[in-house]
Image 1: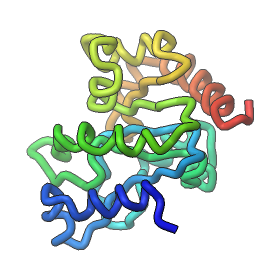
Image 2: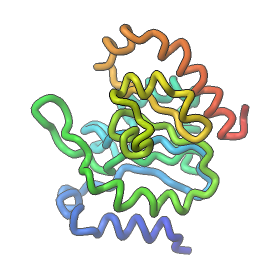
Image 3: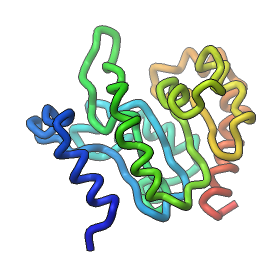
Length: 196
């Protein structure tokens, strides 16, 4: 039986703004099912994830799952975790890393998908793009300040720095993140999944 989520997926694949991805043979990298309790909102798939067809299929994903305190089979169960990046396709390479997600993508699709996920209890906001979009004026001036204020956004949202291996300097300079935020994240995820 065709669901609203199936219809939305077909619509977004067919949308003219995504023709370039269709021509490359790329599928949108996101996951959503009505029972999802936790939504992970990141930037956009990386090149490796786009090639494999699996979201967060790289070193960043390994670290993210460790921070969340969940094994692969739980993270990739769409009835538990929805994965909604700010753009569902790899945006390409820029001069200093990957290009940003298209600014008009999330406003067009996210709210329509989230409307079909009535059981969401927590949004994990990975990186500045997700935080600016979902926290709006509540976000602080910098990513570090927003993540440092993590407790202010509970119980609905929890902002994180990107788990990229390239962020090792940030993690070294901000030991409070792994001392305070990661344990709180694991607790909140377990509660949201009904395991805490």
